[in-house]
View 1 (cartoon, rainbow, N blue to C red):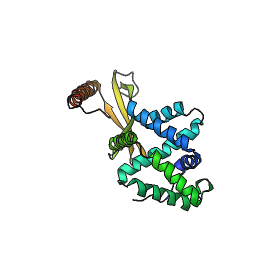
View 2 (cartoon, rainbow, N blue to C red; view 1 turned 180 degrees about the vertical axis):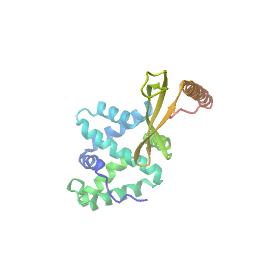
View 3 (cartoon, one colour; view 1 turned 60 degrees about the vertical axis):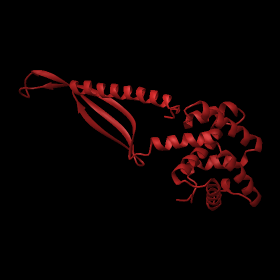
View 4 (tube, rainbow, N blue to C red; view 1 turned 90 degrees about the horizontal axis):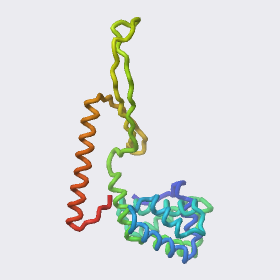
Length: 223
């Protein structure tokens, strides 16, 4: 799978990378390496770290640059494409886009390729992108959840006072399925809530146990 087009969401970032000076590229590279080595390495962390170090750049420009770069780091994990080949595919896609902001002269093409190669050579960001890729390499990934509680009256006869009421709960799960945002609902009672509580407590205990195992094996927890 080759890069054949530049998604609109990343065009601003690549256009900004064209304008970066050599010193800006060095500073951003150093900032990315420092940030991913001392944090979880998530996209938001990287943007915030670079914004702190590059206070002369506009925040929206920094966001555009880091999002564009991170998309390539993640793409490279998925496609297992050599860096030189990835850079070549990117510049061809930019030239073929017809977008003025992405146009490259012959001299500018070489300069851009040098910049993007430098920015894509941060080993710690490459590892972080692999972690991010593995986290979401599933058919469905969790987004959010909510429990809605209701009191439902029980009638012996429709035209008479309720004889009682039942407390019910509805679990709403939101998730990403492929490129779609989806959701489903499950009805729960009090016994189900207690069962779920125990399930989560067991999962937390497993996390603690596995972290101890990683620590004993001298392996960092990259999750």
